[in-house]
Image 1 (cartoon, rainbow, N blue to C red):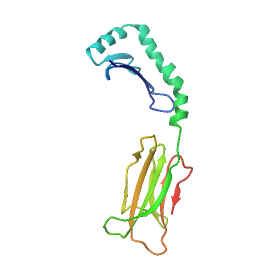
Image 2: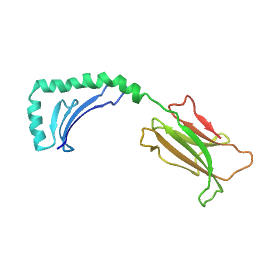
Image 3: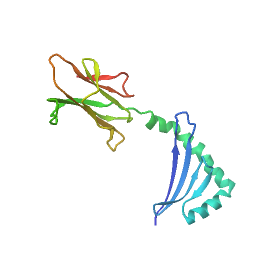
Image 4: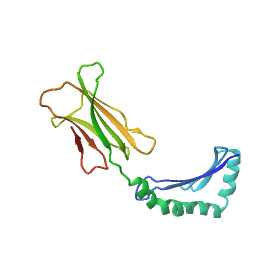
Length: 182
């Protein structure tokens, strides 16, 4: 048999408005009852869970302890959570390389790859002589590495012209200004 209890804090904003405290109970990996601070009550998901919810919801002391979890557990630990996780940013490592293009309209292709950045949101654009290029560009979505970091790859197919300058521009919250790679 396997019994498990999981307490969660869900934050919808940094100013701590809209925090939701959830206290879930599991037996053999199936959640059978849950307290949700937004609802202010227990909800049962199995026959046994419904019986527990009815009993616990009729006890003001138990409900008070659970509701206090919002303050004592979630709000108390919010500063730690923000400084350790949510406020953290990690600069991307960027590599610009020439790759073999698929058989297509253009004889050349560049790939701009950004690795190991956090948080997920990032913008990668191509510039030709300082102007943004939108055609013949393909990019992946931000790809999770599985370790809280992300990577993204953008390809530009082009026909080289003498004297032109092609750049990859990366914008991310960890950078004080957009970074250019040539």
